[in-house]
Image (cartoon, rainbow, N blue to C red; front, side, top):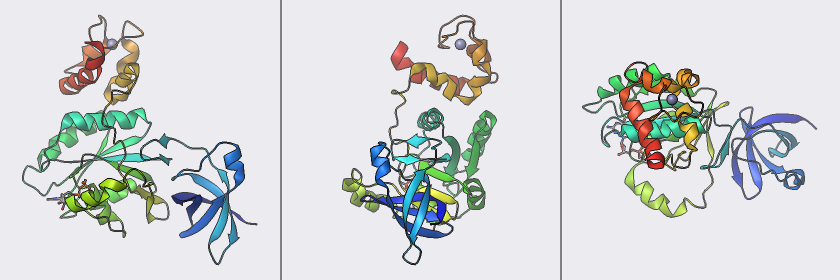
Length: 288
Ligand code: GDP
Ligand code: ZN
């Protein structure tokens, strides 16, 4: 039997939809996974045998090693998180923005900052934010789901990858998905009202954009607090801190009040005072 490689895009009651070479196969997963205590996840790259080509049926025979595994939504092998914010309506909350970035770093997921609604007045504030976050090393896209400005740039960044969208509600996540996929997602308040009761049972799906490009259909990093993060790991999640972390006098430096702190020495220089303040904010509830 021919063995093919594909990716699980959907799971329905013990069977899995596996996308491969532009087709979707409905596959069973062999009992061997249950024996080994492994559950195939959406996003898993798998090997499968085609048992019935005409009916597009198969059997998953192997799960390839995962690069990461997100808890909510439960998805494996996420290449990047698109952290979506609107500059205005709703007004941008930088504190929250940094929390999303830190959560993505802590999960080992590359973050791309997407600034939407640039068509609105005040949309040019996005330019400043772009400079700030590009300087730290993030990719930043300024766009409008309405005018479709910046959409090609976004397309370029998601090509060949699996992306999860994250960000507060109302910033245009569903609108962006509607711009780049053929599948329509409902936008606005109405859909949220209808959805509310369904969230607990609904499983995530990968929306295929093309053969090797996917978007996760439900938002990631929905736990907006960094409280669960081990305090010692937070500094390492601030990208611009990393080059200096080894320079502190104390190995277990918290970069708060310690003498000889290489991080504090950079504040106002390579580390912006605002980002350092937000670092202190995230550490604060633990050490004050
Ligand atoms: P989500 O909650 O993040 O999925 O946001 P939605 O996609 O539902 O969008 C929230 C509201 O913002 C809707 O009324 C959209 O029509 C509107 N919206 C989305 N993108 C844009 C944009 O680029 N510009 C403007 N002006 N409005 C937008
Ligand atoms: Zn330090």
